[in-house]
Length: 213
Length: 213
DNA sequence: TCTAAATGATCGACGCGTCAGTCAGGCGTG
DNA sequence: CACGCCTGACTGACGCGTCGATCATTTAGA
Image (cartoon, rainbow over all chains, first blue to last red; front, side):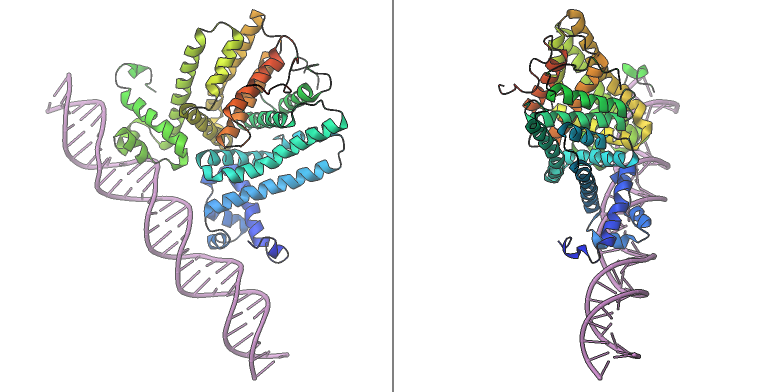
């Protein structure tokens, strides 16, 4: 398409629509958002939305892309200046914690996209493309730590699978208001995973010692 | 609220509706299922559905309850005759693996309910009630293993949080068709978690050794 | 420089299909 | 006959996507 082409010219409106759409979808849910609602926030009309997007579902797809890209760039910037791999991993985790509205909304979008992907296999390739970025970020950081000699040589792929699974699962607990999972306990859990599987002194403390902050 | 009351009399129709509704919701998604669709499968009319359920969303809620109850009973039966706590835990995990259509559908329902709960906090109490059953099952099994002396004394609550988070996250990967997560690798990952955190020889093998099937 | 045509973005109302929920009556059983 | 279960056509609302009209901006010609 002409995304890159018109990079200077007039992508404003299209981006404005996406920027308005994604938090709306995150908060109310895709199926409860009306094209009219998006138009209203943009101060525009439904016709304009359809001028830029063939149908409503195209808005969802592109809104996810928009939101994922945003987060990915944010992550890249935050990590770049950190050399130590363990600190990088901690920073990555910290940015995934559903503490603020922004991150909570991003998780909401993911959750909805998981549901839609589960129901409609056509979305799988899109989903996996996006998800791989996050998986790769973890995996590469593990390799970096092993090169730096601060992680032991656990299989990076298997570890990335474990850490991301636990992250996703924990985030769900928080978003659904589970009484026994807080942002703090999520952080602690993920740090424990890192230390238990990548720490140089194998199995020093698994879950037993986690009283102190 | 005459569930228990009419337990003997004529809950057939109501149960038949739920039994028809839940796989339909699992496969197509709640928002894509029409009351008419449910009625058609039951060989009945839309009026009958509304005779037993005030609104469509009541069908969703009750369908989840139906599906969760079913799974819970199935679990209880499968576990009862197993004495060894580790084998119990493995059996629990085995029954959560999204291998067959039945379990995949159950995960689909959960995924959808997570999404709805995230969007509508009123559902939280229902969700948490259901989820606690699963959490408790893990926790009690850990305690049993510790009493049996085959698990070390890791905090059962923290461990249950970790195992269930990882389970949920892994299931999502499978349902969304992630290329790097299979039923086998999910099983292996969860077993590794058990051994790493509950095994008597702390940190014997974390993720490093998992080549063999 | 001024005017006119052309281009393309935007608008908002309407059409058409869809679907949850209703209602007035049918049917079978006790 | 009476009552509870069931029916399915109907309704009213609603929302997506379309379409002709409008408006702003640019280009072309004189």
